[in-house]
Length: 149
Image 1 (cartoon, rainbow, N blue to C red):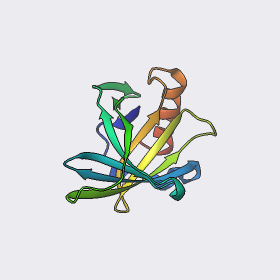
Image 2 (cartoon, rainbow, N blue to C red; image 1 turned 90 degrees about the vertical axis):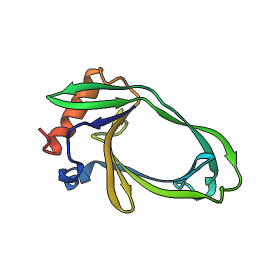
Image 3 (cartoon, rainbow, N blue to C red; image 1 turned 30 degrees about the horizontal axis):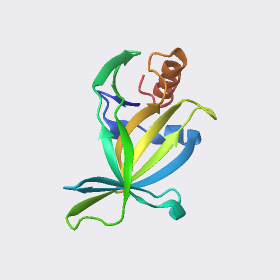
């Protein structure tokens, strides 16, 4: 699940405040065409495959934590099948995600998404329910570290 900050200007967040919590970087290439979306994961060059993906869209829910409105999106990208050529008409997006974690094996990551070397989005990512106490505690800790609250 991705959890977005609803009313926060991402360009006013000082990301240097959480540099010490950086734990992982992933690069993705998305190819958008009339035939659908293709994803290339660039984290392991030997495994680069063109994967046709489906987007399993789910309704967005809203929750408030510490007087900050959050949007919870449980939509997922699912690999459908490997393809072997890119349609002639297409658009390419290169995305770099930098993950921040409060501790090893944490179930919550604060993700900074870059597109064309500029911050494109920030969100929390977890596989747990947002209603779990320690998930909300970790989100609150990031709010404090980033001086959002």
